[in-house]
Length: 475
Image (cartoon, rainbow, N blue to C red; front, side, top):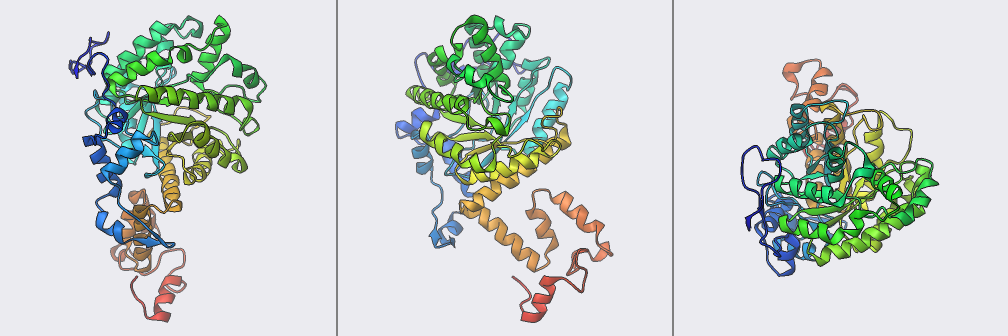
């Protein structure tokens, strides 16, 4: 790599951004297609196995046997476009991780300020908090003030891949007037964010003029912010989406920094009535065409998905994504399976997300309890992350992921043995589990010795009775 020109905003640590030599490619896909196993590929293979290689070899369930993830398998999946490692060379703070349907299901946490509130300190704290509770990636969706500075501080404190939607900052540069956007402004914004270290960009290049009439017939229209911005621009200029017409140039920029493209579903449904309609699936076909074009540049791709979808239509989304988008990883917002979940939309999203992930969705974007209601705070971020980690884990169980089954089996053993501390530590929120256990215990001094909880008491605990009946004391 060689130093690139400095971005218009100097990074806070005054480092010189890196990029590939002119005409060169440094992407993970480029290396994978050449048969090269990168350090990042080695790392994610170890991470996926969780140091359980020998145990995985002996694990059996439902007449299935398993093999540990190898670096060569990681390379093959990336070379075929079925998995990605988002890892901008200007983001050395992050630990590599892999997104693909043949690996553990990942979750993303959205953070970022709005025009109505939040500070840089608050958003950095949310980012760290999201990672603390298990977010595999985070997206900075800031739309308020100090977008560049907020993103810089998030990146410098983020141990996970960071994504953005560059059209938001481009819109800020033209005073919020979509009609004033230009390709040059957008291109400069891409480079600015690439030099900061953003690992993946959501780019709404599939919102085409041809699909807008179908979107106008919907109950809730276009609910994607990026999609609505580009739709307004297209209508104002009576011209095709410049993200679509300049897609090759976008890919050339991404190639120079090894930035993954998350091709945005700008026409995702925002209500059950609009699910799986012509606008959504028309755009999905275009996303598949753009995937092939990105792969020609060795750019890693994932595909964004809905949205609001009733349970009976969820599976069709996975089937069509695999067909139209050539098995590129699917990254979805839920889907939410009802429109009446305000205040509980994190649970609503996890229901649909569990089903879709069990069918092959590679990453779930979390939803917080504040969805549709307001900007989430730290507590909302925690709840959103935990509920979607639970959804991802449930999907991993359905896909027979060995490490997922190991954790559940150990939890069951701990329950049968009344090993309370082990139970707490195996949950997604040990502090909460411990607090609730303590609140129901008549004697905190004997908390870990009690062979019952406050639900059944000492005389009606089924596991205690089972042990007495069978003489089997430990699992």
